Image (cartoon, rainbow, N blue to C red):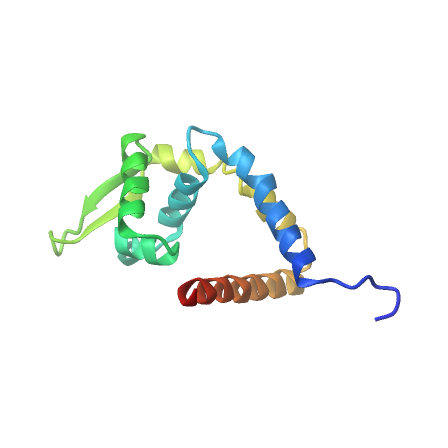
Length: 145
């Protein structure tokens, strides 16, 4: 690997942190904070069976209480709606409203998605797989510490 600078895990973590910082500031747009944007994105992309407080909390590695507060804020803002399952009235799910779907058209995460979309397909697949491995490693280490 002559001619290539060495890359340390710390340097890579710093680059990842910088990406987060670059998107976190603009994430306070549309009256939402970053956690609310993440929730709105989640419910817009999740299948009907995964649009629950529990599924959202599990997916975002947070508590049900924190997830409930975030969902409640989106409901108050008119961006999510509570929907009872027609076949089982005990089941409650959360669906983005038209306003919520419209706001997603201005999602600050689009900056990152556009940069990734500009990469060749094989780089996109590699980045996705490696990012998932890093995330899972962080989650594992959080559970054991």
